[in-house]
Length: 390
Ligand SMILES: [Zn+2]
Ligand SMILES: [Zn+2]
Image (cartoon, protein in one colour):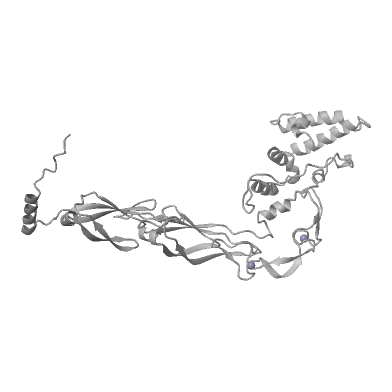
């Protein structure tokens, strides 16, 4: 429809209030219908001037116009609706939609029935007869009197590595909005009264702040609406302190987020509950190092086990396993136990457990140990440092 209001008033966007007023007066005098009888172009221009001035002379309206352009009029220059629209537009809470905009209709026709007497009155209610309904926006945002999804809640859980790998159960003290028992979360008392939106008329009339008309969306035109629950005030939720027993699935790491569906805050007015997220923190283990789903463990063996080979018992988080140490195993030899690492949180194959052999020399050199070592020295006189040349 109209051009930019600043262009109409022939002022820069940075113009002061005084400049705007001056420019408006000058041009209004020039294009006033009394001075231009029968001149349709002048009449149209005069209307535009007044529209522009009404907005730009009002700091609040000017601010919203700067932000939303001509759509500001459809928001009734109402900061609350602007806020709702902003949130909606940014795909915020409740909407679940991202980007895009409200399907604003292009604003009304040429103003055939325009009444000059309206010029300083309620001109904004005239525009927009299309499919934009601010109540849709408000409803989508779980505004008053519409069901809304409950908030998501995050709880931190600290675990040992063993618990992280095998799974754990925790009882958490949770403070969350819970379902109101009195109204069963509906937010409504059993009786009805006059609809608070339309004051009982069942209809909403188009006005400056409401660019639509028709049946009241709150009461669907009946004029009666349930009275709000006296316990929760109508939201259907009450802050509650509760204890929740939760299961932490096997395989979590520090920073894992586990979603427990529907365990978050209760929805308002019977809306669906939010989710509870467990954010896990896993303590370091003194012996086992973890990399992703793989685990690393040093496995001590005796000199004779390393020389002769042996079957040794190795503890894992899934229970003890027997591992074959091959004969003539050097210290540092690596062995892989497939699937004995951490389970995959994402449902894939589990990690592996890597063992690193560590030959332990007897730290108690008894005469028998000494004699055995001397016998070994005689039996194995090779120079083990022969290759050690720098
Ligand atoms: Zn109503
Ligand atoms: Zn209630």
